[in-house]
Length: 83
Image (cartoon, rainbow, N blue to C red; front, side, top):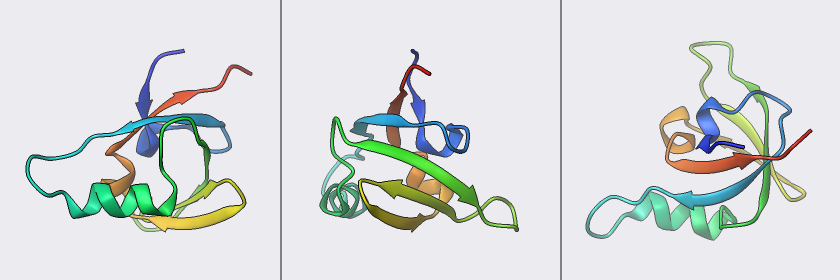
């Protein structure tokens, strides 16, 4: 399946993290996402979106749930799993 970003992944569609789009220099957001567990190969799923502009996103990775800003989720490249 084609790669997309976590922000554009349909809700309840499991995917695997491919990589985080890091910016030049020291990218603290990319590092924070990796520390939270958004690393290559991890299974991730968007559970729901906030009521105002779809922000934040409620995301499950492993057994943990996180609220991510859509701008943060847009930097996480994922590969949807086949149904």
